[in-house]
Length: 303
View 1 (spheres, rainbow, N blue to C red):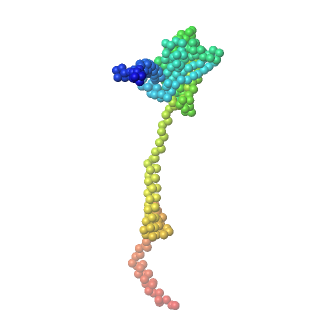
View 2 (spheres, rainbow, N blue to C red; view 1 turned 90 degrees about the vertical axis):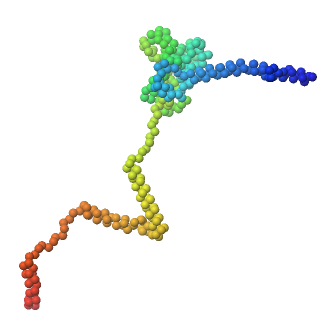
């Protein structure tokens, strides 16, 4: 009876499921939903990326080129301020900013007091929700607009940040650093904060060098191969099939032995010119007869 009572308390069935499991599901389900929503928001914020109001096909190529840098955060400091920089993401967590409505801050200027940053005195330098990309030879310029307005100078226009990413093949991806170059605010308009970053991602792709052979080189290689095969196969045939020894193993040895003489004869025939041998002059009939008579009288002379 006691066993039945414990069974009813622990494993009482409601709709075919134990009550303990139902209560557990009612407790875990809201937490699970909250976790999923938070994860979706976090993923959305980390992959939101820059917004380019004047986006075109060229901007898409540039954004793809700096893809390894997107979503990263960097820090730059000077004597009075610390700058938190996000590449197409929030420079700092929104919870650290006093004004929670000030979102999409790409560059945040934080005042340093007694060596510590004071977020309550932070200023938005530019937002990645209004960005632009410009390309040059060996550099890409990322600009953030719609920062907090100046108080008294630069005609009280909104601040803007310019991040100059220059080519440096020795800086590997992930080891980049950002430096504050200058704050150009001595103008009546178009003031900006200039930052500099060296990275290898903006370096132009070097063309693949291919070594091609000219027609003359190919003909020389073919000729050398043919000569090698002629000698190798000819020597093998002469030695193993005909039993030749020494120099006689060279294929067509007699031809190559006379090859120089044949060249000399050909050169003599084509290049040299010489007169024909002198022919005897024509003798008249009387001369022949006189010469024969002289010959016949030789035996009459006294000895």
